[in-house]
Image (cartoon, rainbow, N blue to C red):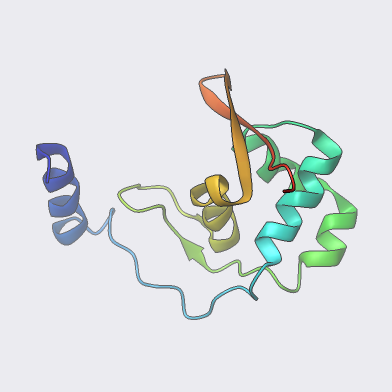
Length: 117
């Protein structure tokens, strides 16, 4: 482990601001992937905050997926800020859903849909 990872692990173990409990339930399998795919089909290319904002504000996506999304409050490991679980899942798994273009906007990676094989 690096010194930085040891410090982060120590903070998670000793500082209540960094620790969090595991979510009591999970999403239905494939919900986040389908929602991100539909969002990127409309956006073309986007950063994670752009996709999250679009998914929150688009009435069609909300109507279709809101009952399947888990909004249990959680954190990204090592972070202090709380967020809904579906946002965390989207933010931490983008490389599994999409392909990074190699470009950045506002310091954040830009993603596009993966090409079908």
